Length: 343
Image (cartoon, rainbow, N blue to C red):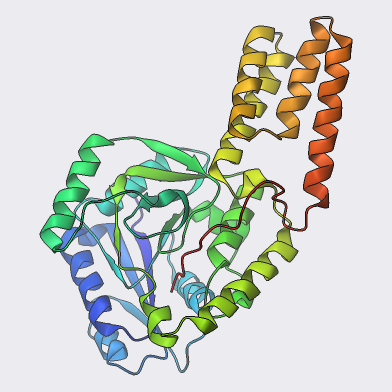
């Protein structure tokens, strides 16, 4: 028997958006495929009453806004056996959205989390879309996307929490979200990195599209965005100090380079010299300072009898490693990326 997915929706006000989200969930998700856990983060606009009126939903009420991480943690505590899906209240869900996400996760045994593509999200889940000015246009686009990208998956270094499917075993392995991020931002980056470091992969289901208005809660709390910018800077500093992440733990191209470098190392160990060199060079085309790729090429060059070239490559590998260790951010050759507020 396939366990239903535990869908956790936190909300602070924005009842009109929440009502749309819940309606599309009910209309386009078979009722036996999910359980609904709703977390009211101290709303004052009728959200609490809307949640209480939802048939079959488990509802949690906070007296004040405790933030995204605290809300989803409360929902996870109430979850039954099965995967967990975090969902922002400013999303719209087309037919088949949950099934496509679930198939992507379960057909990839070492995937710990899966996320959809969207019209409004930071990072590599963002795709170009036509103007989607009606619900019918959104559904038509989602269905066209599903056909064109059927079964396609892409590994990524981070997934955004606006719509995030988490394998049940990952919850047991990694635990809850870090509530020190407060109202929101970077708690999903934090969780993504912890999942990666636990040995799981993160995947994007290219055939699953979820519409996201984006930032509705933050816009209501902070119309001039000044507090948001301060919160973003504070949480980014917390994240960087906590992890000192390597590029392959944050950027998709660096992660792809590292996967190629790992493959090149295996090829070299198995004696496939030509393929190891080709794969190592491909890794460096994606991320020119990957130390592992440089080490593999050094080893391959040494086997070819070019000790001088091998020594130079090892020097480059060591320099790349030291540059990463010396950088306060872990990103010597990148700029800060835009970040989406989840919550």
